Length: 370
Image 1: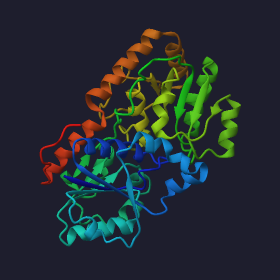
Image 2: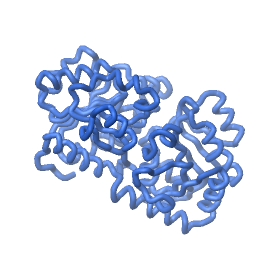
Image 3: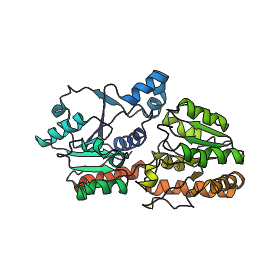
Image 4: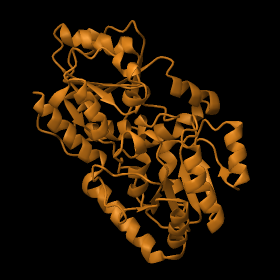
């Protein structure tokens, strides 16, 4: 089977979390013997920012850890009909331009013999619905959403049983516990400041509790304005800048625990959708403590796979417990890792995708094992 994916960028994960999941899924498909082709637009915003900040060396981690993957850079002049003539499946991520979404839909309408799916992994359908409604999806066969709450939005828009919940997951070929356990110290948080929509939550559930407990805190991420950096400095946080996602496992391996601080949209409006960092952290065998978040879809066993703090005082207590109780740390690691290995890896999501495609009439031939 030939799978074609149109992404914003495969090479760059600079403020582009979908690249994490996409790399894992495409690699899994390739290892099963499927033909995989990725397209990304010329001048992708994420890639341009990465190259501006770090030069070509910023791509080294991706290239070395994903040797199976590459992407074709395209321009609007691309002959899409010819490019997709032998495709069985075409998936288009929502972080693409409306003209591209429409152009691919036109190819499908004019006789394209592939299943065409739209992939939504963001909160814009509720935070800025007009930004999604501008996409011409009339000729698409279905929609993949990364959570039930988002799928329900598309059902209200008339998609019915053509919308499918396809959660993100961890690429366990890369994200796994260290082969040799070393010394671990302090907390780590990997996340972008962005527009500051969770700045208050970060102070309440990360900066202040860590400072009070006396746990050193390292932070990795991008889009930290001067005011944000001043806040980190006030709490004694060490800001370490951008981290290639492919290097995250080795960073997790050096720290005692990590924290999940969801953006407000995933607490108030789209419950049940965790950041992909939750999957990746648990896959790496690091204890996880979360700020308030409703696992509405029962993806995990809350309080067993990870801890949840309902307020700042409870977060402080959880941090002390993780710091001082090795049995608790061991239990969280074992249970969190089991959750990933049993149901939340990219291999599980590929199984699900193939089942979805079969429902749409696209069946894969006999697969080759990796």
